[in-house]
Image 1: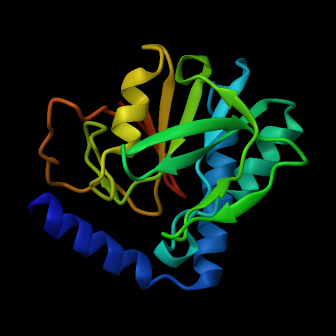
Image 2: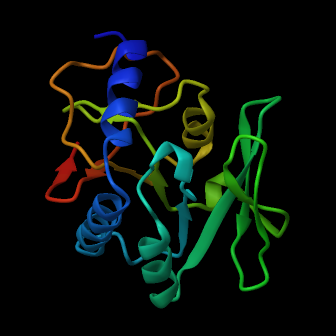
Length: 187
């Protein structure tokens, strides 16, 4: 399958999930994340889910990161440059939805890409080699390519990997892990 076909298929698959299924599987994904050997660093980047896209609900993981007294980083998208700015989350952070329905901070204390040690990455699909398929604009690949080489990249998915290899471009950044409700995939 081509990337376009995979995107269509996985969007349809996600759209078939009920609100209850999303909540249950999102909690299971959070539980799996808590078992990973990643909790000895400081800066954790977490995406805020686009509800209309039925993404993994990261509010459970959000709470767990804060309970562990870690520094939580959230991003704001720039659609002109297809880049992201990162901000340290605090109790005073104002989150608003942009024109595309993406929740993001209005402002805050800026965090450099190189400071982030763990990144939880949204995705539509992934293969058994850790190649990720996103929405196709390259926001996360640009971001991840600026992170430190040792930054841990973790995809979150409701589904197991596709059996098809995702065609990789030179700017695609592979994942280290993908967490699904029932399994942790390491690459």
